Length: 67
Image (cartoon, rainbow, N blue to C red; front, top):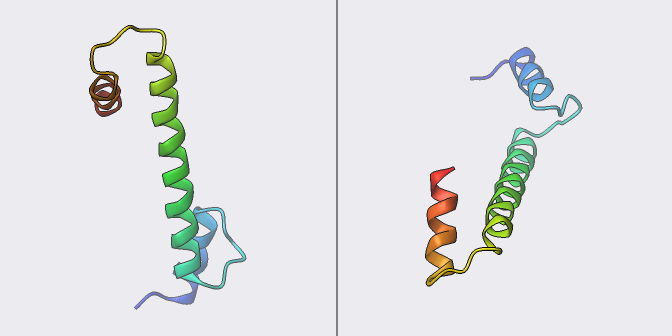
């Protein structure tokens, strides 16, 4: 079982020192990670716009996976 002190340390480590809900904090972290990943994928796609490609979807997928 997680102690109150360990919980407080975890919340401080993820930048949510006042959070009273571990589930809320985990959801927030997951959402922020997904948004950051989505933005990185968009940047890869933007970089590929200038190229003339036979299959732009596959090219974008390959570029995203290679990062």
